[in-house]
Image (cartoon, rainbow, N blue to C red):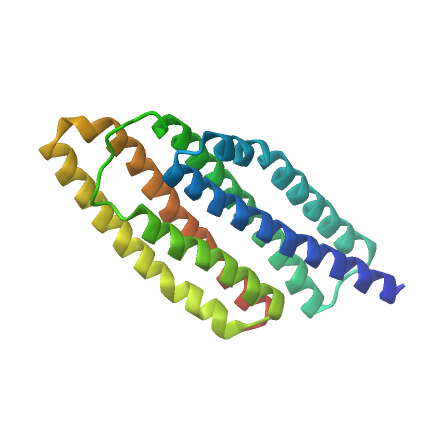
Length: 210
């Protein structure tokens, strides 16, 4: 019975890892759609959100069943708790990818965009944080989790710098106001991605008893 329990625990863990890969890919695709004005790619990101939601519900149901079927010992309970917390953050990152994709569609036909805002740079750091935090979760790597936590400060700094650059450009040229307003929402969304990745890093450390 314990063998079956551990097999179910491992299968649920793998579903969490798969969910992490899905949302990281969706986030990367949404940023690519924004930069390349690719509305078809953006639409695929939006459509793929149902798969993310379904997988999150599957993991949650599995976690409840794991607790109900057999009272987990301390280490197992930490794993289940980390799964429940992690999939909540991952599902939100998936939502953020959808938000960016929708904003990229709005921007597709806007000829003039702000030039000084480093969306690609902040996006690259945020996406790396998501991929690295899932690797830290998968490999039980506390050091990598700590590096993700530390990197959130860089995302915050770039976010505030981007807001300042946006404000300056929109004040200097009213022609970029429409695009600048949308980019502002994109920057805020990417900053929240960093926060969610940091959350998962903390869940991982708690799972490891660190």
